[in-house]
Image (tube, rainbow, N blue to C red; front, side, top):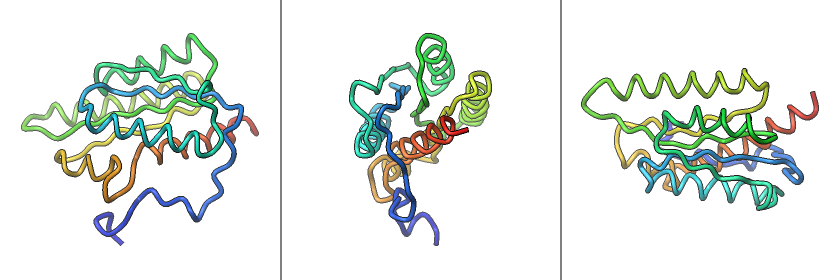
Length: 162
């Protein structure tokens, strides 16, 4: 089934786990704030719905999606988190800037995870237009922020177990 036909944020078929006692950072881009604000709301709701305490969630705002990389690195360098969620939105424009930013952000976030041996979750929308972004930030396709929160909980629990 194509994504145009369903809500992608359905977790009814999986056991998420309990986030109680886990510490999270949510690094969120200020660029495309209409979208990233909705992603942040979804992430916070997802974390808290599964037991994370508000005091165990730090929100770090960075200027744009490229800065998610250094925001996550700074967070791990200065505090102990079980997982970091990176939220951003890069919308295709008329130049190749989109390709370079998406590639750099994906690789950079992966490198932070490897550097600290901790989960760093990629919650960055890379869409063709604003409508697609809004559809994935609380619209008809669910909320990628909530999906990132569920992934962070699952990965933090795996990290603690192994």
